[in-house]
Amino acid sequence: MEITGRLTADAVVRTVSGDRKVTGFSIAINDTYRSGGEQKKVTTFIDCSYWLNTGIADYLKKGGWVQLYGRIGVNAYLSSSGEAKASLTFHTAEIKLLGSATRSEVAAYSDSMQHAPEQTLNEKITFQGIDDLPF
Image (cartoon, rainbow, N blue to C red):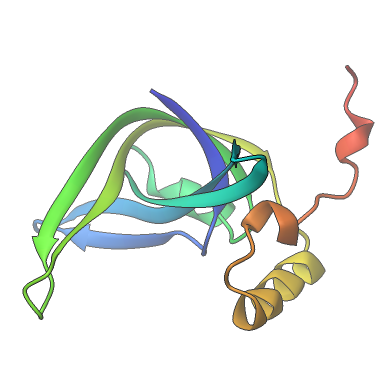
């Protein structure tokens, strides 16, 4: 399966089961659709894991744009209040870095998320030079 989204935070390397290491990160995928003539926006958050090379964590920075290949899963659990909850997970086999955010863009994104969390990531971060692509 292939998914593309923006990193919601810097990747973190964790040690599990003795000396095994995993790179963990989360992405947001934005989508729009029309319902009753009104355009709606929805953001889906997916927790990702990458077991092959922890060195990639240095390049997985908040606001970066990535394309991932792997398999999707679901983590179902009960909250402390007994409510059924679930989160999406992605077991990543391959990562393609498509672009990164500048420091000013990440700062602007962080500030805007605190003041308007209902907006999507695509509305918050634009990349300089995106129109300079050769095709």
